[in-house]
Image 1 (cartoon, rainbow, N blue to C red):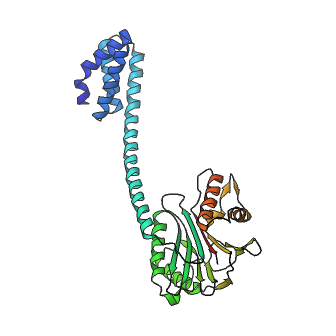
Image 2: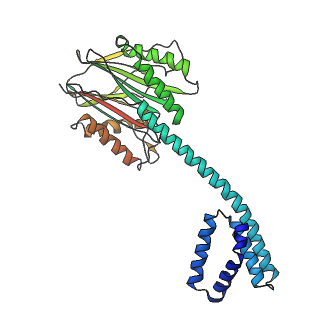
Image 3: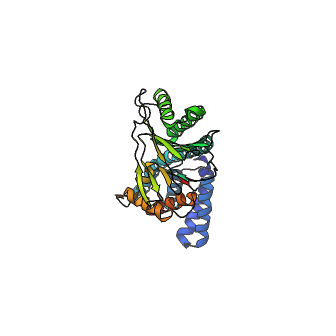
Length: 336
């Protein structure tokens, strides 16, 4: 208030000049006065108070109803100023939170980073996009010394930083398994034990784990309540669901997981995904699973990486470029 009191005289002159002339120069000076007030962190009610004082000095006989209306405006601006201060404080906290989330998202990218295998005879593609900054989806590749590759795709029922931390634990737990325990049933039973002991009961994790054995071209897999993927048979030129049943991780420590296997012929594709793919919407309508396989079929002549990217772009456009859930797709195709 003290700063504006010092400017009362100049403000009064400025107000008088504008009332009498209404010229652009007076408006320009008013604009400079506003900028100066912002720099000095002066509240709106202080400006109104100076205006009321200047007006009463310029026009001592101003009608009471006009002065009463100005006092009403002053009280209104006092409430506005308090609300604005609260708003600014919340904005600052929001900026701090956004900064922390950005750091956490970068950490998640680092912690959950994985290398897509480059194996002769296999064409592998993967696309993963979070709906928000932090992803509740996870995929990971593990290779052993025998030429086999393990593929994990998981989804935390929940998002944000807790989901990211949970996924970090999942990855490093998986990395601790020795090669001889890479078979899917053993992996999921071990992960179920880890999750049951370390994850809050309110959070559930679905996971699909597959092992591609290049020596025999067999694909072994197990599921812990995860979204079914697709298997493409090049010979029949058709898709079928990869059916595998199992309890979500962390519900029952004693749960066991059935292991399935299939022979992968040349040209066949294994398509793994999360429910962010199958639960895409076209307006208010959920897409059908057949729509996903039809889109994949449309691009099956492309390399696996390009297929996943084209499928993602298709469903991104379908949702007006606003993902409702994290989107992850992995495609493994036997080329020879």
